[in-house]
Amino acid sequence: MAHHRTLMTHAARIGATESPPGTVGAKHRALARRITSRIDDYLRFAVDPQTPFDNNPAEREIRMAKLRQKVSGGMRTFIGAEHFAALRSYLATTAKHGIDGRDALTRLTSGDPWLHATT
Image (cartoon, rainbow, N blue to C red):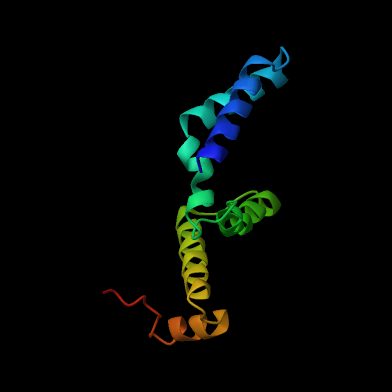
């Protein structure tokens, strides 16, 4: 971990001092500042095997809503947006617990929704 920290901070220093002028350089310097101030967050995957290397699952969760927004220009009503978000959240949660989407929806519409067991 110490070796990774040294490499990352060294790369951040290089990015901060040797970046080109202008907007590209400003982006390099901003990234260098973020890496320096949040080094533990950037290296968490190196010490915790449960931490994913990237945030693709989080991006996948919002992709459908963003696609719907892009195609149709957004939701018609706030209530419709709330229902859409609740349904997507329910299906994503059940999928993470190994429950088929059709089964989850069948249970939901029959008045017996799947609920995570609390301990």
